[in-house]
Amino acid sequence: MDKRILFVSESQNFLVTAMIKNLQDARFEVITSQPDIVEIQLKENLPDIYIVYLEGDLNSFNGTLKYLKKLLTEEGKDRVLYLIGSQLEVSSAYEIIPKALVSAAFMRPVNMTEVIARLNTLILDEEGSDGKKKILVVDDDGIMLRSMNNWLSKKYDVYLANSGLNAISLLAQKHVDLILLDYEMPVASGLQVFEMIKAEPKTAGIPVIFLTAKDDKETVMKVLAAKPEKYLLKTMEPEALVKSVDDFFKGK
Image 1: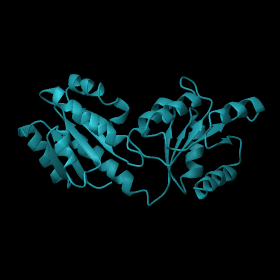
Image 2 (image 1 turned 60 degrees about the horizontal axis):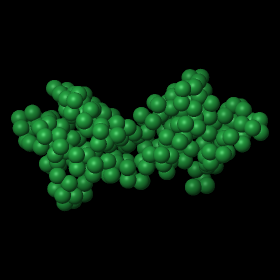
Image 3 (image 1 turned 90 degrees about the horizontal axis):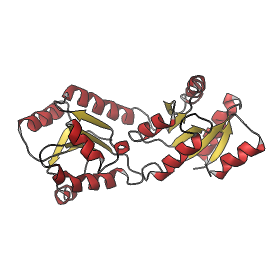
Image 4 (image 1 turned 180 degrees about the vertical axis):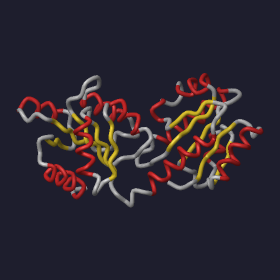
């Protein structure tokens, strides 16, 4: 992901101009647009980072937010959206575009240092992976998470989530190549999280491998009924588990 931003605002007032200058001083290329679908569509080589500054007539943003929602959920693309506005304006935007698709929302008066820090973290995450595959491990057991991170991080970029809701939130901001998902979790079970992942166009194509501590026939049949890519037993030796992940990627 490069340092190019589409900045959408209804007017180029003093605050907007100052924000754009802050972004440019941080070496981001900023492409500006009115909240107008046609104007956005006509721009060549559209960036993958969108910032929408909500102010004025919020109805004028509805079409743009719907169009950006379409871009954010396009399969195979890794795009991000930031919103800037008041609490009421941001809440109104969530009625058009799901909160899960918004990487961050900043309340006015906005702290541009915070915005730029988030952007730089995003760019570093994308550029610092050295082509490694990205794996999200979801498990409510902290010891298991740390173990999986130790086993896998030598070969892969590993993200950790200790609940299904945290996993969904992370997936709204990060693209991953594989999800290792604990089947038995409280609050939102692995199966429920799996269904949420497959229901969202942006994440539906991400392969999921279930992790389970049980290998009895009844549990295995329930796991397989969900039709994940496969399942792995938590009781496997670390070397065998890592090899299973390696073999999965080799087969792709």
